[in-house]
Image (tube, rainbow, N blue to C red):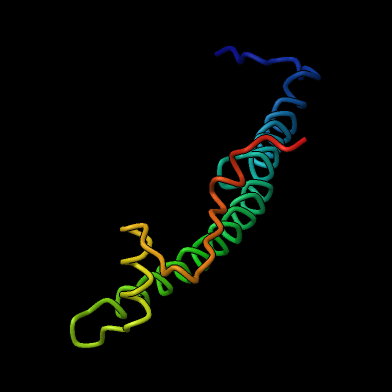
Length: 111
């Protein structure tokens, strides 16, 4: 019976360490640069802070609008609010009042 013997090559001895290094490099790269990597997580946290600030602004605006709408309900009509709305919509003023239209002032070119 004959036995076959192989020569130990240098490439065979380096194959497992090189493969391991390649796999570690792949996962190391993607742990920083991947969709859910460290840098992406930081970017998502910054974006979340910006969106939370925007949400707070929108909530404040919504509560202000809700408060103004509450003043227009029939059970809690504010006479000043009715007077203001009527004057604005009808362009009616008393003879002794002075009206300054800021919208018209903003449209005129300044010299």
